[in-house]
Image (tube, rainbow, N blue to C red; front, side, top):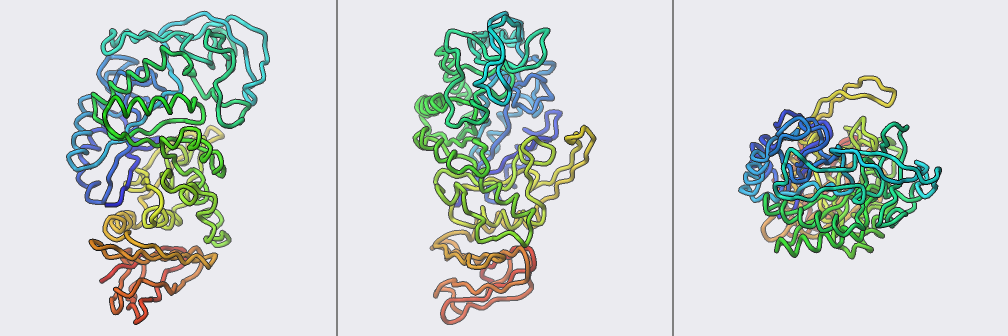
Amino acid sequence: MNETMIQFFHWYSEGDGKLWKEAEKQAKYLSELGITSVWLPPAYKGTSGGYSIGYDAYDLFDLGEFDQKGSIPTKYGTKDDYTKAIKALKKENIQVIVDIVLGHKAGGDELETFKAVKVDENNREKVISGEIEIQSYTKFTFPGRGKKYSDFEWNFNCFSGVDYAEGMDSNIFKIKNEYGTDWEEMIDDEKGNYDYLMYNDIEHRNPFVREELNTWAKWYFDQTDFDGVRLDALKHISFDFYKEWITLLRSNSGKNIFAVGEYWAPGYLNLLQKYIEVTEGCMSLFDSSLQNNFHTASNEGDSYDLSKILDGSLTQADPLHSVSLVDNHDTQPLQDLEAPVEEWFKPLAYALILLRKDGYPCVFYPDLYGSHYIDKDKEGNDQEIFLNKVNGIEELLKARKDHAYGEQKDYFEDSNCLGWTREGDDEHSGCAVVLSNKDFYEKPMEMGEKYIGNVFYDLLGRSEEKVTIDEKGWGNFPVPVGNVSVWIVE
């Protein structure tokens, strides 16, 4: 069966502890659509407790169990709700991918005094002050947990930088600690060095920190029996650390844990390839370059050359390490990395990731369920956003589940109309896919001799025509203006 992931949340997912219960309820439906893995959001307590989306991680050992940061449940529910959801998903043979945030911590319990230097926000290698003494919330004692599961306390030696100093203007401060006076090595020189992202930046050169994070990973696995990990913000974390962390997790769990990392560098395939190289292929990466192509194509309309849609993508260059996507929580409207794919193009984009042989596709929650939310735009004004369910998304998923198998033949010779066929295999009949960003087309494509005389219809219902495969195994497959058609045997 073809593997298919869903990101089962978005930035504005409903709170009040409802998401874990919804995941439990939706498990059977997802399985019927052919979803084989569910990526769940960060499950541990964030600095704003029951309101935290989870990327402002406070206590990794609190999965909605302790009264901390103003609540016992996280935004998504209690620990009991979480484990029930995981069991329900696994019962439907769906793998569970958990979100791992190990680049920073937030919401420290106590102030500490230590030495630091200010650095330029746009060039973190540039020091803009002498050595100064500052106070910041770098002491984490987790009083609400009372040392259950771990008695490790975090202090300023566990961090390389902060963005808060008591009584001072906001700035990025490089901490002077015993593990280094420079930032950790990154694979790119963006912002001079992009080790620092936000909050209290974790010092992965501290051996006690590494030991704690390795111990926590085994504890987390024992609590939940997860199948995979999504690794947050790789651009800002030592590649050396994650290579070791994943290796130990797989060894300690006795399971070949799947790993996909977020190294967001749209248009910079070379950086994705470099990261895969330095981590010795121990993880896949989200294909931010392909997502950027989709965003551009959806905005440029019929002036975009569809024959180039896969160019510069990880899915094309290294499909075994690519997790392809159309949108995610960072690209959705009103987010910092906002780069949404326009609604008209989404069915075309999903056909490209779901019905081709390369890449491991990830569906985005609002694209399957729809979404409505309000947030501030860049000018600070309230903006109401409606994200509609993608037209035909369920049929596209079922086409992947039932028909996207076997040899693939590409017909990419036209700048406004693409097509390909999948021959099928011993258990599945194949399909023909045609998409257009301009006019109505009829695409001549070969299905193969075994389909001679068979009649095909458009699974998406875009066309009422029927296509009969001729004596050479070919058919003329139509597609409407600016749309996609998926043709299967009647």
